[in-house]
Image (cartoon, rainbow, N blue to C red):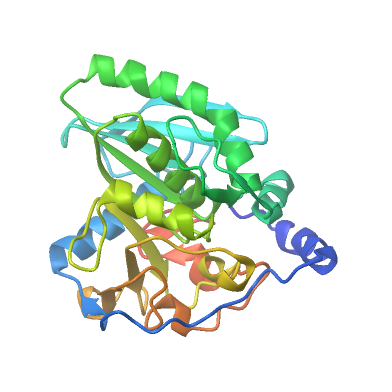
Length: 298
């Protein structure tokens, strides 16, 4: 999420007139207790976080050293994707930054559920967030063209998806669309992603990734402390998260306070915190380990 200093004040007026509650949480019984992550996994989560707030006009060089911009796509409403190339790791990283403008903020709040008319997706019962769907469908053709050109030029490179905030929500849509079309995605990391659809949508994404309590597939839904954004759009409004949540309990303290959480709506991780802010946006949302959306990444 790229944070505009005037956005909070503007957002307050939007929230004030919104007819339905935005922030809300329902605690579900945990399917099993959370478990700490390994040092290598902690390092991976912080590493890819450095891409999540990066874009072509970033205030500083956020990506890991040696990364180059392979391609770029943007679309109305102000949706961006940057495709990075890491030759040392032989990776292509498709990155979606988060809320950048008032238009993005309105997209965040366009929370009506509509059928999941997404390229490649065949899920008649899936209903998704109208604003995110509009953003993804606007950028999908150009983003996929840029990706296809890169994969043709670098056929042996692995593909990763990354995003933060609204970009995290777009990461989920990109994962579902591309995976359903047969793209080989090594992993997807979403940071501070809000709920984007109904139970059928969450189950569809879990089926694509193979995420269960007994198996960690390639989709990682990363949260931080009391970040309120993952809590917006309550299950009481028909929204549901997909697996699997990874929770930085205390920032960049290391693997001892970073947890894998079980079930779609674990009650012992981010859901156990009261996330307060403008539509859920607070300090924990802005400063993830590896991510500083108002400055440089760590």
